[in-house]
Amino acid sequence: MPNTSTNNLYPVFLKLDQLRVLVVGGGYVGEEKLNSLLRTSPDATITLVAIEISEAIRTMAETHAGLQLVQKAFESSDLIEKDIVIAATNDKQLNALVKQAAAEAGVLANIADTPDLCDFYLGSIVNKGDLKIAISTNGKSPTVAKRLKELFNDSIPPEMDQVLNNMQELRLRMNGSFSDKVKQLNDITKVLVADKQPARINEERKWKLIASRMIWLFAAMIVGHILLSSVPLPPIPELWGVAKEYVNQQFLLFMLAGFLAQLVDGLLGMGYGVTSATCLITAGVNPVSVSAAIHTSEIFSAGVSGYSHYRFGNVNKKLFKHLLIPGVLGAILGAAMLVFLGEHAGQWLMPIIAFYAMFLGFKIFSRAFQPTNINVKVKRVGWLAGAGGFLDSFGGGGWGPIVTSTLISKGRSPRFTIGTVSLTEFFITMASAATFFFTAGIGHWPVVVGLLLGGTIAAPISARLAGKLPAKTMMIGVGIIVMIWSIRLIIKSFI
Image 1 (tube, helix red, strand yellow):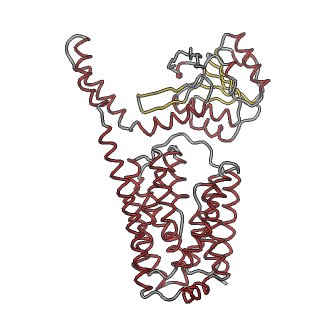
Image 2 (cartoon, rainbow, N blue to C red; image 1 turned 90 degrees about the vertical axis):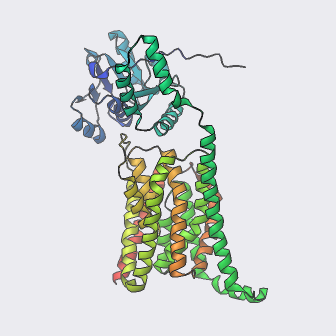
């Protein structure tokens, strides 16, 4: 049966700085509403009334002169001389009371999570300078509106504001009738909607071809090394005798490290490197072998993950180009420096890695408490990628906690950030593993095999649990465990 429902909403863009707004509620919902209002209209005059007001809202009031906080219970008199009221509480009775008082006072009301009581909806807003797009789903799915907003934010380049300014200048300089101006502007702007599908397809094929060739190249290099080192092949019983020497208690610890690391990474989307590095160093593995083994084992999972994100359209190509070269150079430099220090200053390497692991543990722990941030343009992305690649190679992990966390905390879309960073991570791990291969050799195969086997066992479990365990609790737990392990390693290094 076809859906005959219609959306009767009429979109209107308000000059909020010329209206008087009342917000009822000082908790998380109130903070979200204020973020939305102040992000698009920073000069708006807003009065917030609530019995309890969060610290995040108080911080906003310090930077927005038009935001006035009144700590008390809501009264109908609060609506005097107000044009709009937003009820942003979890108390449905209070929200209904606000709606009733607003109707009596002739004030338009928006009631959080109650579309039937709303006179208007707050849409998801895409803001690119003078370009503003409001998205509404008629109150049915704010999540869909949010996802569309993320899509538009990543699809529309920041230069769009300059395009609008240039178009205004061009329009003012044109001569002739209105009809002539429309025709001229139409001729100028038709290039914006030209069919670029063939070029886009060729671009995608090019990157897929590059990724596939890199995977096969490294796989061929490893297989060739193993075959050349093993010719002539000994009898199978003799091979089993050699392999049996490696399948011991330490090998089981390598498998446990791979299992825990993959479990954490599958649930949080980051933490593979720091978790496995902490476990392996605790097991007494040389720091150089730790980082080399982690990046070798990560090549396969990173390649599959990055290709999947690219295939499903989760990659921002512009961000990818900014991350790729600095990240690869940083990874090569970090791997080379780790090998150098391992040969000339090995006694100091353990505490350095331990301090770095503690920093990453704190980074994961603190991310669990990060509030919702207003979008901020990320500057010096190349330097961020270079630092992330260097520390990832040098410390055995950190690309995700450093690069992904920083970009998302600055307001980047989580979907496109995670997808782009995951694709870049394949090239980072490839560069790091190749550097270790040519500088330190390839004598860490028991560690690599242990990590791969443990990770293979954990992969379906983490996929099954993904989304069912609270991410905040997981981040707190992983962060605390990594910090405790790191402190233990630091103490052990100096005793």
